[in-house]
Length: 374
Image 1 (tube, one colour):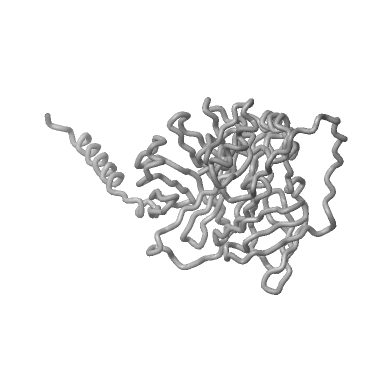
Image 2 (cartoon, one colour):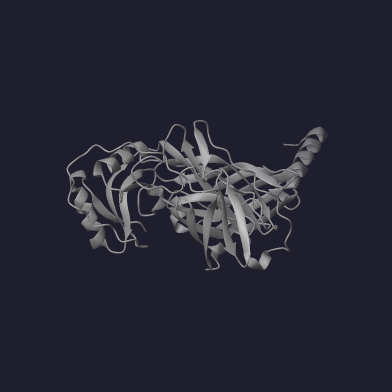
């Protein structure tokens, strides 16, 4: 069929338009495309004009593939503003519950790494969101492609969803009482307290903010955050260089720490006098039970577990029923081998399974058992 001159002209214009579209490369469209490492997965980062930023999986590691992630699955989409702040949505994946998105903020560090953080929803076996956990996401360029260092913009502080408040990097449900119970919690009311410790011939001082380290003397880096690891243990994290400092509280007014991972032990003290605990009501006289052997402090991996519960208060009730200060409530997310999203009444850790079983037998009427943390 012979086309008219007008039809030939239209066909020529349409062909040229398609040729331009399909021949344009990302670099021609104003985008850079680089590969970053993230938790042993290879990610593809597209950074385009006007600040658009997308991160996708290119070679996800096996454990991520088992959650339904494939090559090309979008992990993050957002943007970078003119001041260097990144904001957008990251995604968490679960084969059982599917994909869930959450807000994150962050920055480029020295143009060789991307640091993001936000509060990822934690879901139970029924795929119901039970709490929120601070999530830190670090993407690094392979060493062979890292450019020269550049100044660091500060991390934008995250916020919690309605009904939750931020403390120690955790979004805690409003109205909860995580400090109650029979166990000794030396970090109770730590926000606002001021501390000092000596190191290298100097005395350092700082204040615990809601989830940041404030008013630090002698020039600490800005943006240092702190998170609760387990009972009486905190971790400080420096987003500038990725270093951490673990702190173990020995009492309400004293801690022991390793100074930023250099294996030099330091001892810290609270400034402003002794923290007086609230008075406790007089106990009701009762028959004195037979003495129980106290657990030996250790860095073992075995726990005695007397029940797991969807809420802190229910787990605390079980601890109170056991009537011993050695039992306490722990978030199951602290142990990779436990099902996350629960609160457990536990004792430990112990060096051996046999010793953990000895204390589990004390709570046999509650169906207590032993389990490894890792």
